[in-house]
Each structure stands twice: as C-alpha cells, then as structure tokens.
Image 1 (cartoon, rainbow, N blue to C red):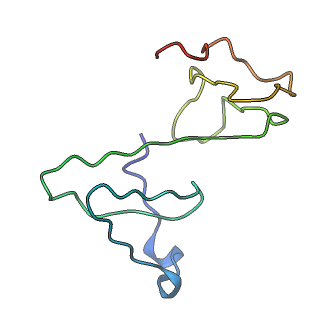
Image 2 (cartoon, rainbow, N blue to C red; image 1 turned 30 degrees about the horizontal axis):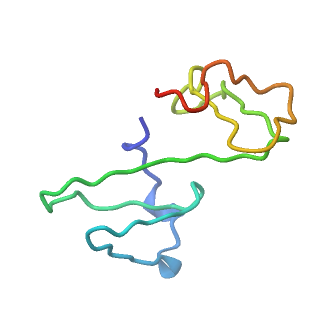
Amino acid sequence: MTLNRELPIENVDQKSAQFIELTARQVSVHDIGIIHGSAANSSGRRRAGLALRYMSSTSCMNRIMPNASASWEDMRMELVGGKNLHKGNDFSLGEFGVGW
C-alpha cells in the first residue's frame, strides 16, 4: 500500500544522501523515518522487504489515523516481552505463536 508513495525531490537533501548497493544475501536495516528507495529489480532474483514495528510497552497503538495511507484496524499486535503497561492496547487480534 505504500510502495507507490514518493517524496518530492526538492524535499531531499541530495548532498547528504548515501548510495548503498547491496549484493546477494545482504540486508539493509533502517528506521522507518529514513528516506529510502531503490530502482527496479532487474536481476531476475526475488527482492523481499520485511517491516517490523516495535514500541515501548507504555505506548498505545493508534489503529485509526486521519489521512493515513493504510488502516491498521485489523493489524495483529503481539507482546514480545515484558508486560503491557497501557490499557489502550488490544491484543485480541493475535495470539503469540499462532500462525497468521
């Protein structure tokens, strides 16, 4: 749902941009706030992306956000460790260890 989103080039400081070319079996791990992108995959090999979103157990997942590009109303949420410290979190959509 977000692969077609673009940032106008005039909003990017190209002087501080870094070009990183990955080889097969390498990964790029970065924060969601980092502006990133890539050219089309012309290698004939699969390219995959994986998004993991972590938050503090004192935070609350805001499932409905005005002007968001996607709805998180039915997104599963798992408690990875510790104890949930916010009453607003709804874990009813998922159960740890059960396949999606």
